[in-house]
Image 1: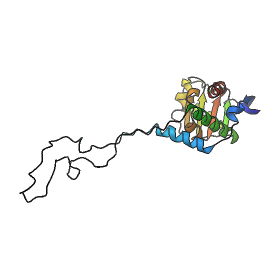
Image 2: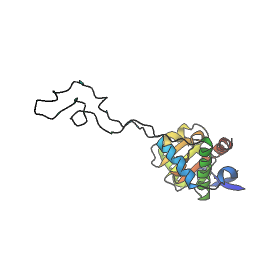
Image 3: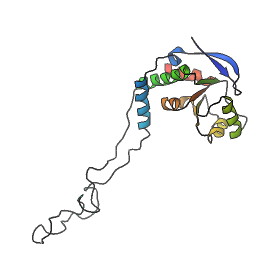
Image 4: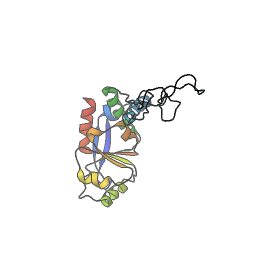
Length: 207
């Protein structure tokens, strides 16, 4: 049985909650985490770098001068890679970097990332993260209560006050539970889970 403390925004313990061992108590495999993180980062790559080959460069295809009798080297079209303004030989072409992983592997990796945060005591559960208003100063006070500078906050639903209060604070990212992913979990020192989001995360990963 995995039990973790629940805190309020003053970093005071208010209760305890039991976590699902199939989500927060699994063995961590670095190879699977690496595979999913690489796949996730590759999807962000544009892959739009490209150059024109000699067949794509505009211009006349007429031979610049006759083959023989001029005393000059023989020449083809102006699109030749050896001429200024011509096509590029063996240059980069547009491509896709997508490296898909199965849904089963992706869910497994998220469970491993969550388990790693629990094992390293970097997982913090809070009752709620409801801010009284949109004010960065108030949000910074809350974060300072937990003595953290780089944290991922996962909410169960849309929270405008929290999202707008935190967006100018460096090292802080707020996402909703349906957007939880391996890279964001591992890329932040602490993981804050709003209590109602835990049940939804467990349900999504087990199904």
